[in-house]
Length: 580
Image 1 (cartoon, one colour):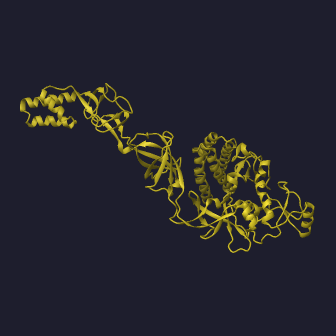
Image 2 (image 1 turned 90 degrees about the vertical axis):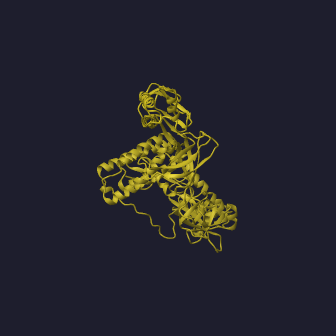
Image 3 (image 1 turned 90 degrees about the horizontal axis):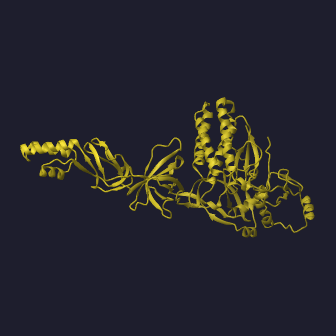
């Protein structure tokens, strides 16, 4: 089925931007167009000029007219362009006008990328203690009466009446009276009291006064804040019963959640900086001391723990915090390219290289493969080498001029020096069971609800429907498929689950749209391979999404309703193809 295009006035914005190249064309192509239009057409006809569309460079014809796709006026191609479709030649005047700037690529020390982490404050489990009763009895009075109260070591916490303690005192007095204070019987009675952690002062007082003390005072064995009060006045407690749970809040834990895809870049000992809304304009820091060896099956995250000091008591348990950690780089030294040099188009990353020793200033189109990002650069995995000179300012102007001249560019991959090798997708529709096909149909409908929420710029609703999408995915975790088909599905499934979880966890619609782009790419591939269920879906494309990088999505209707811009550019885009 041929693609169907729907254009609104807003979809001409990229064309308008590209037509800036027409102005530069006077200088770039070194042509003098000061003649009347009728003269241009006559001369063009005589020299065999080819006309093309700035938005659809694959359109070519030998006479002026309009583009059959978008109905824009066709423009003449440059007859004097170089023979290499990957190299764009420019004049010195055009370079000055476009403010073209370049940087030589070299080996750099990568500082690693920044990871944002969410978490909360928790008490240090090693600083938690329980105040217990070492003797059975009834609580007559509490000196600590509410949760959150500060307790100091040695402070009186309760008074209690204990019948066994009364009996033990009676035994001691009888032993002293009949056998004397130095007798073994008297020492045995004292040992029994000490076993209950009765102080020597208490024992000496009983012996000195010669009478039984009916109540005993209990003292705090450690300092801390009362986290839980477990008794009340009048309660009868057994030996070893818990009275209070205490925690020393001078030392706390900051617990963060890290996605499993980021764990390879995090090490014990990394410093994490964090803030909390409860203490504005204040930065805190700590070091990662523990990484949970287990992954949460639902959120696909692992817990990170940083130990922090809290002498002023500013931080309190259960406070929400937002942290940032500098992830460990992939290597100590790597080839880096400035971020300003990279043009994004779908899954491709593009730069322009200045050709060395060229008679005319020339810039070569180059697709590269990128790795991790630092604050101002990307690691280069493939496509560049040390010493290459890349354009860091004005690359978009070069790309616009290249597109007008029907050369290789971000939006025009039809022209290439060598034949492109596209990845062929397998076709497993014949092996899909009715149950899995039904699941795919439900999956597509649930995805479309998230898409509709983003069209309305409703982050709360899209997060809610992402929960449904995650649940539907979990039901499809182990489908009955042949080995090769199952391996393909597991790859798609694992990636889908991660990106859907991020939509579910986010309240920022722009962050949700970034993850939605990944989900859309994965589902487009999935539905092409397995089928989409009962209804056909349209693959639609917005060339202006994500700073003109472009992005696809799926829709059940041909009408364009853009989920990446919402009301700002509701009808920007066109239908590329359909899948079923």
